Length: 234
Image (cartoon, helix red, strand yellow):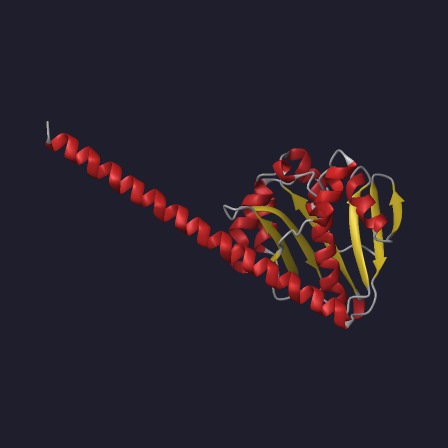
């Protein structure tokens, strides 16, 4: 079965050094939030921040700013699913795109693509996003998950292989396909909990960001008052 399009190449961070550090990170909870059309600009900023080599890994070629904007504007949130990891300032530092073909009922597969900001790599975010997208695909009745990646993207292919995917290599490109199990009560509850964690985390970070903004405003007002008092006393 052919791949969907060249906009779903994954780019994954290299593995972290040190077994203990990897183990600690693998057991930590990483809040992941599904994002919608209201986050297009954050998605665009995340992808536009990728350098030329990272864009090559993500899209299969060194995508221009214009091509990235076209990709973001073309995201179909009614059909596809986008998952994101945000830092405390609500900057999107990692995202995954679970893309469905236009005629999903006949195709019977979805395709996975992911990118992680350079400064956020080595934390296992790519693997967590893969797991999050996979459980959603399972609960959505997707029988097969496809990953099309450049063969040099060994980290992504390693994640796919560890998940049990069959990998076929053709020159500079590789394609992995993972047969997914049917949904269970546990898989549905697991996704529900993951959704809750992601939503709560985002709300807390949003509230903290608003509080920081308010504090900054108060400090600016105080500084302006002191400056005014100083000038009036001269």
